[in-house]
Figure 1 (cartoon, protein in one colour):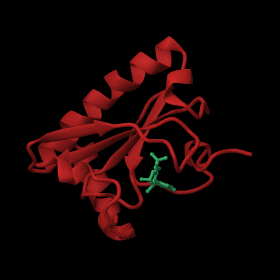
Figure 2: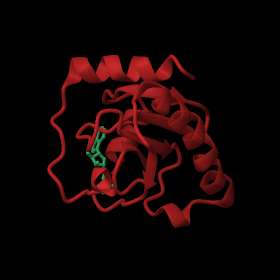
Figure 3: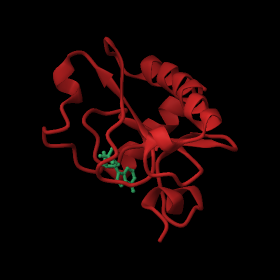
Length: 130
Ligand code: AMP
């Protein structure tokens, strides 16, 4: 069965897309820790990030860098935190989160609700910097 991220990549379910190329896609996390929380996902469906082939493994960080620089332009923060968890969705992905403190990356905290219209606007605002 396809992962929810493969369904997003195939256009079967919607997302708040920020960027895409042949190998990767970036879209907003549906339940972010902070506004601007973005996921960078390889199009190949591999669960564990360290099972990606070397090209996808290195390429995801190069792609993530471009997206992180765009998030920084839109959201005031100390920097963009980068993390990989992967316990919920079995499709490798990198979280990019605008942070001012390590607490902004505390995944045990309650996450924010999905606000479709607001997230559409945020995705557009970030994408304009790419
Ligand atoms: P994890 O697999 O533990 O890294 O967490 C998966 C992340 O994907 C969580 O932060 C979810 O909020 C997020 N997520 C799950 N489904 C979607 C979706 N359809 N669109 C965007 N983000 C999602």
